Amino acid sequence: MYLIVGLGNPEPQYSKTRHNVGFDTVNLISKKYDIEVNKKGFESLYGSGTIEGEKVVLLKPQTFMNESGRAVIKAINYYKVPTENVIIIYDDIDIEEGIVKLRAKGGPGTHNGMRSVVSEINTEVFPHVRIGTGKPIFKELLMTYVIQKLKDEEYERLKPAIERAANATIEIIKNGIDIAMNRYNTTED
Image 1 (spheres, rainbow, N blue to C red):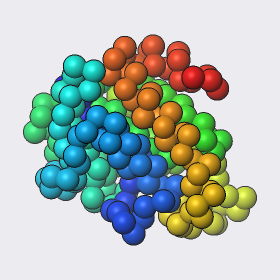
Image 2 (tube, rainbow, N blue to C red):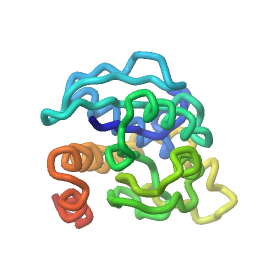
Image 3 (tube, rainbow, N blue to C red):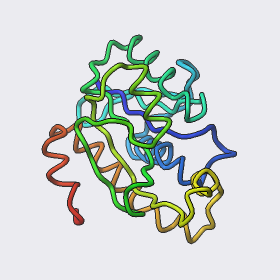
Image 4 (tube, rainbow, N blue to C red):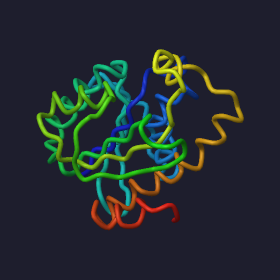
């Protein structure tokens, strides 16, 4: 079993923001595999189904980004999912816009949602799917940059990365994180 978590802030207020590309990726996976993410529990919206023969739970924490770990640990404990099968999908300002990078383990960096997840589940060893959003020229504008509504053309530039992140997540389920990293940590599909 896999727990696939997209990090974000409750929709619709925060939809089409850089901080919600994790939610957008889960929404895309949900659509591709016909898994409704509409049940309420674990301080989240979630749904379960099957992807590539594996049982999965898709999870969108509703705790707001900085408390995401609370929701993740509740789902892990309930489903008894080993942390190596917990895939966290999130935005990363330290990666160029539109680039997707995978890691088998690693710290939270500057991401408060990931800081919460790592703190609650007490490990850094789980698949990370990071979607590059770039960062503003001035550090003081960071919060506005990640949570402001994007113009349609700005959001369109992120759509291919969201699609790539969804495909990379499926690759992790099919063939494991090492093969997925070899395939998706390049600039081509």
